[in-house]
Length: 167
Image 1: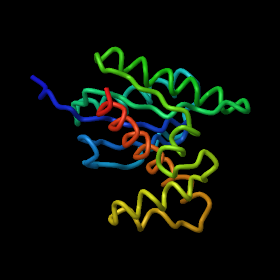
Image 2 (image 1 turned 90 degrees about the vertical axis):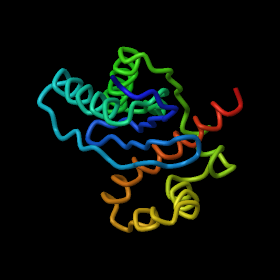
Image 3 (image 1 turned 180 degrees about the vertical axis):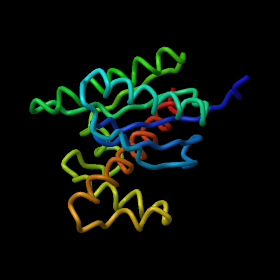
Protein backbone atom coordinates (compact mmCIF):
# COMPACT_ATOMS: atom_id res chain seq x y z
CA UNK A 1 0.00 0.00 0.00
CA UNK A 2 1.49 3.40 -0.97
CA UNK A 3 2.47 5.79 1.79
CA UNK A 4 0.35 8.95 2.01
CA UNK A 5 2.55 12.04 1.80
CA UNK A 6 2.24 15.76 1.27
CA UNK A 7 4.90 15.60 -1.42
CA UNK A 8 4.64 17.80 -4.46
CA UNK A 9 5.86 16.49 -7.79
CA UNK A 10 6.69 19.43 -10.04
CA UNK A 11 7.30 18.92 -13.74
CA UNK A 12 8.57 20.99 -16.65
CA UNK A 13 7.30 19.08 -19.69
CA UNK A 14 9.37 18.64 -22.80
CA UNK A 15 9.63 16.40 -25.83
CA UNK A 16 13.28 15.43 -25.27
CA UNK A 17 13.62 15.87 -21.52
CA UNK A 18 11.28 16.32 -18.58
CA UNK A 19 12.51 18.32 -15.61
CA UNK A 20 11.23 17.21 -12.23
CA UNK A 21 11.44 18.23 -8.60
CA UNK A 22 9.97 16.67 -5.48
CA UNK A 23 9.24 18.90 -2.53
CA UNK A 24 7.73 18.55 0.90
CA UNK A 25 6.59 22.09 1.60
CA UNK A 26 9.55 24.29 0.64
CA UNK A 27 12.05 21.48 1.28
CA UNK A 28 13.59 20.10 -1.89
CA UNK A 29 13.73 16.30 -1.60
CA UNK A 30 14.89 15.34 -5.08
CA UNK A 31 15.36 16.84 -8.52
CA UNK A 32 16.61 15.95 -11.94
CA UNK A 33 15.93 15.53 -15.61
CA UNK A 34 14.44 12.45 -17.26
CA UNK A 35 15.34 11.84 -20.88
CA UNK A 36 12.38 11.06 -23.06
CA UNK A 37 14.65 10.40 -26.03
CA UNK A 38 13.54 10.60 -29.60
CA UNK A 39 10.39 8.61 -30.24
CA UNK A 40 9.30 7.53 -33.70
CA UNK A 41 5.65 8.60 -33.33
CA UNK A 42 3.57 10.93 -31.20
CA UNK A 43 1.85 7.89 -29.72
CA UNK A 44 5.23 6.38 -28.71
CA UNK A 45 6.22 9.73 -27.18
CA UNK A 46 3.02 9.85 -25.10
CA UNK A 47 3.54 6.26 -23.94
CA UNK A 48 7.12 7.04 -22.89
CA UNK A 49 5.96 10.16 -21.00
CA UNK A 50 3.27 8.12 -19.25
CA UNK A 51 5.85 5.53 -18.15
CA UNK A 52 8.28 8.18 -16.85
CA UNK A 53 5.62 10.09 -14.92
CA UNK A 54 4.02 6.93 -13.51
CA UNK A 55 7.44 5.82 -12.21
CA UNK A 56 7.87 9.22 -10.51
CA UNK A 57 4.41 8.84 -8.91
CA UNK A 58 5.24 5.36 -7.64
CA UNK A 59 8.66 6.42 -6.34
CA UNK A 60 7.58 9.61 -4.53
CA UNK A 61 3.85 9.13 -3.77
CA UNK A 62 2.98 12.80 -4.29
CA UNK A 63 -0.31 14.31 -3.18
CA UNK A 64 -0.03 17.10 -5.71
CA UNK A 65 1.21 17.46 -9.27
CA UNK A 66 2.42 20.89 -10.41
CA UNK A 67 3.16 21.58 -14.06
CA UNK A 68 4.72 24.46 -15.95
CA UNK A 69 2.29 25.48 -18.66
CA UNK A 70 3.95 25.17 -22.06
CA UNK A 71 4.31 28.20 -24.29
CA UNK A 72 2.95 27.41 -27.75
CA UNK A 73 4.61 29.68 -30.32
CA UNK A 74 5.54 27.21 -33.01
CA UNK A 75 4.65 23.71 -34.19
CA UNK A 76 6.99 22.02 -31.70
CA UNK A 77 5.17 23.89 -28.95
CA UNK A 78 2.01 21.98 -29.83
CA UNK A 79 3.83 18.73 -29.15
CA UNK A 80 5.04 20.05 -25.77
CA UNK A 81 1.43 21.05 -25.06
CA UNK A 82 0.38 17.45 -25.83
CA UNK A 83 3.08 16.17 -23.45
CA UNK A 84 1.71 18.47 -20.74
CA UNK A 85 -1.81 17.12 -21.33
CA UNK A 86 -0.49 13.56 -21.12
CA UNK A 87 1.21 14.33 -17.81
CA UNK A 88 -1.99 15.87 -16.42
CA UNK A 89 -4.01 12.88 -17.65
CA UNK A 90 -1.60 10.52 -15.91
CA UNK A 91 -1.89 12.61 -12.74
CA UNK A 92 -5.68 12.53 -12.88
CA UNK A 93 -5.57 8.75 -13.34
CA UNK A 94 -3.54 8.55 -10.13
CA UNK A 95 -5.96 10.83 -8.27
CA UNK A 96 -3.60 13.77 -7.79
CA UNK A 97 -4.56 17.39 -7.29
CA UNK A 98 -3.10 19.30 -10.24
CA UNK A 99 -1.78 22.86 -10.39
CA UNK A 100 -0.57 24.49 -13.58
CA UNK A 101 1.39 27.74 -13.74
CA UNK A 102 2.29 30.11 -16.58
CA UNK A 103 6.01 30.79 -17.11
CA UNK A 104 5.63 34.55 -16.48
CA UNK A 105 3.88 33.91 -13.17
CA UNK A 106 6.66 31.52 -12.14
CA UNK A 107 9.38 34.08 -12.97
CA UNK A 108 7.41 36.75 -11.10
CA UNK A 109 7.18 34.49 -8.05
CA UNK A 110 10.85 33.46 -7.98
CA UNK A 111 12.55 36.58 -9.34
CA UNK A 112 9.95 39.26 -8.55
CA UNK A 113 9.95 40.06 -12.27
CA UNK A 114 8.00 38.49 -15.14
CA UNK A 115 10.80 39.61 -17.49
CA UNK A 116 13.52 37.63 -15.69
CA UNK A 117 15.33 35.02 -17.75
CA UNK A 118 15.64 31.29 -17.11
CA UNK A 119 19.26 31.96 -16.12
CA UNK A 120 18.16 34.61 -13.59
CA UNK A 121 15.74 32.13 -12.07
CA UNK A 122 18.35 29.35 -11.96
CA UNK A 123 20.81 31.64 -10.17
CA UNK A 124 18.26 32.66 -7.53
CA UNK A 125 17.31 29.03 -6.89
CA UNK A 126 20.97 27.96 -6.77
CA UNK A 127 21.69 30.74 -4.26
CA UNK A 128 18.94 29.29 -2.02
CA UNK A 129 20.13 25.71 -2.45
CA UNK A 130 23.91 25.65 -2.82
CA UNK A 131 24.06 22.03 -4.01
CA UNK A 132 22.42 23.24 -7.24
CA UNK A 133 25.11 25.83 -8.02
CA UNK A 134 27.04 23.41 -10.25
CA UNK A 135 24.04 23.25 -12.61
CA UNK A 136 23.19 26.96 -12.71
CA UNK A 137 26.00 28.54 -14.68
CA UNK A 138 26.34 26.41 -17.80
CA UNK A 139 27.98 28.19 -20.73
CA UNK A 140 27.19 25.41 -23.20
CA UNK A 141 23.72 26.13 -24.64
CA UNK A 142 22.67 22.46 -24.66
CA UNK A 143 23.68 21.94 -21.04
CA UNK A 144 21.95 25.18 -20.01
CA UNK A 145 18.71 24.04 -21.69
CA UNK A 146 18.99 20.57 -20.17
CA UNK A 147 19.50 21.75 -16.58
CA UNK A 148 17.09 24.64 -17.16
CA UNK A 149 14.30 22.05 -17.24
CA UNK A 150 15.24 21.01 -13.70
CA UNK A 151 15.37 24.59 -12.44
CA UNK A 152 11.98 25.33 -14.02
CA UNK A 153 10.52 22.28 -12.28
CA UNK A 154 11.99 23.39 -8.94
CA UNK A 155 10.49 26.86 -9.44
CA UNK A 156 7.09 25.31 -10.24
CA UNK A 157 7.37 23.20 -7.08
CA UNK A 158 8.24 26.21 -4.91
CA UNK A 159 5.34 28.17 -6.37
CA UNK A 160 2.89 25.34 -5.79
CA UNK A 161 4.13 24.90 -2.21
CA UNK A 162 3.37 28.58 -1.62
CA UNK A 163 -0.04 28.18 -3.27
CA UNK A 164 -0.88 25.21 -1.02
CA UNK A 165 0.29 27.12 2.06
CA UNK A 166 -1.97 30.07 1.25
CA UNK A 167 -5.12 27.94 0.76
